Amino acid sequence: CHARLYERRPDTSSLPFSAFFSPSTVLVPAPKSALHREGSLWVPHHIASALIEKGLGGRVATLLLRATPIPKVATSIASERPSALRHFETMAVQRDLGPVRNILIVDDIVTRGATLLGAANRLRESYPGVPIRAFAAMRTVSTPSMFRALNEPLLWTITLQPDGSTLRRPETP
Image 1: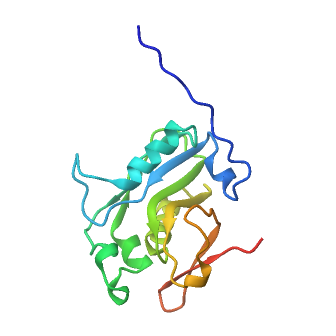
Image 2: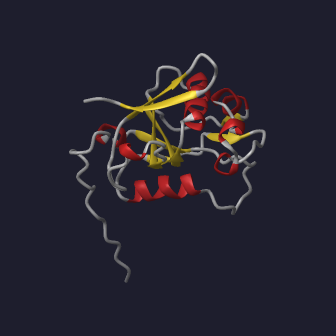
């Protein structure tokens, strides 16, 4: 006889992004820079699956895939990182048969937010009117004085600049 233990949904009410994780939210892993290969490590997919296992969200759906490979952001120097437009141009949407009422793009690390902004805009074409947000397990911090703790949840806004670059800034309460 096997018994499966179900944990209660964690209390996220005190977090600034608690509304992101409703039961109607579809968690969409951010695509890798390379073309998807079955069995390859896809960290955002693992994070999204772990969030679902903890009761944070409705389900995981691989709505986004990389159609054209691009240089890996983590190993590119800042001036050569792909722009939000380049991310948008190299992603494709796979339609989902289930209902999609809220989308949460899940990534492992956000630097300036070009991947997330490109992904959100690509999804917006196929899911107009559906709220699209993003969640990253970690963020980079360029200014040492802005670093306070590893586990400091914050809301950030990512904006597209006139020159095509992205700017990520914390929201003020």
